[in-house]
Every structure is written in C-alpha cells, then in structure tokens.
Amino acid sequence: MNNTYETVKTRLLMLCDEKRMSIHKLALESAVAPSTIKNILYGKSKNPGIVTIKMLCDGLGITLTEFFDTDDFKKLEQEII
Image (cartoon, rainbow, N blue to C red; front, side):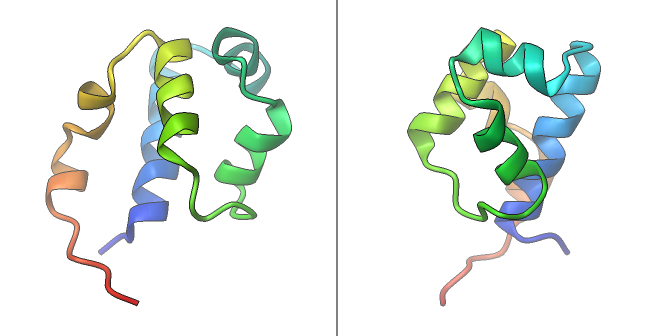
C-alpha cells in the first residue's frame, strides 16, 4: 500500500497526464516553481504543504476536494511517526 507522499505524487502525475500539462506548464499556471514541483515528483520533498497543493490544484483547474477525493486517498492508513 502507498504512503501519503506516494499517493500525492501519483495523483499529481495522473492529473498532469489527464490535462496534458508538463511540469513547466503546471508551474506557469499554478505560480509554483518548477523546482518545487520536481522536488515533489522526484522524492526530494516528501511533505509538500497544503498551500502548495492548493496552488497546484488552482493551476490544474480543480479543487482540493477533487484532488483528494480518490479511492487511493480513502484507503490510506493512518501514518503516525
């Protein structure tokens, strides 16, 4: 089972593919630096903030609810570290 980070990463990649958006285009549309997006996608940033996720959602033209309303997020187990 995926952890939260992997689920966020997978969801971002899926949405970019669905909307035919490159990382560069998403960066332009969301006002999030390309390096920040790459850090999320390639594992350097494993805990992106909710404000960053909201900005990415704005760039993708979706709400936070739409971003997180997937079976993968619903199946995540509690992560207590």
